[in-house]
Length: 248
Figure 1 (tube, rainbow, N blue to C red):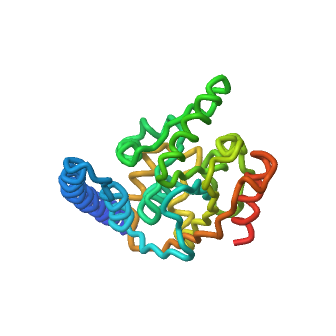
Figure 2 (cartoon, one colour):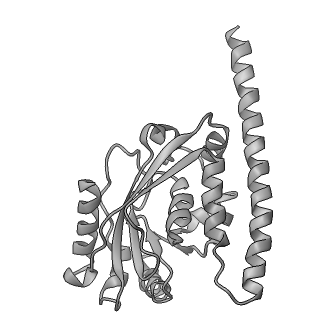
């Protein structure tokens, strides 16, 4: 009986994953057509972020937003649990991202991130830090919100890892009009299922999320932005962003 129940659950999980993938592909085809039409007429396309938000919903997310996300001239600093964070931040604030170069190689996830103009950087390349900072400053100057995950890796949602200040070097010296907006992403009771830990291969984690039963509520707390020019260096900026997320 136990074996039969396990087989039945496995079968239903496979059907659930297949159904979700079909919905994602159908949504993608529509979004690509609309994206192409917007670009053809030289307009900024909202369809990548709309598509990413829809993907999150297809995968079971009921999204709540608290606070007001800034729509331009902002670096968003968020806690990091999963690649799901990319769908949520892009879908609610229209952000592009700074992500580890390894993310670009992940099936589906890397392609989706690239569609949203993600900046892929080699985190371990200390000689290339200057180029990374220059690329981030250039991206911020274009106006579109840019999101970073200062923990540098995914956590388990039980604690907030120390913030690495390297990416905040892009804000020193200050860029005119650019603010930092901390964001607390709260997956509630679904955090354990969605957490992507270092021991979990990317394809296995994606499969687990696709097969996950039921829906869940995720809340994005967009906290009060602050002016990085009020802080003496990148370490102080990182510490302030982390403090505000902890307070949330």
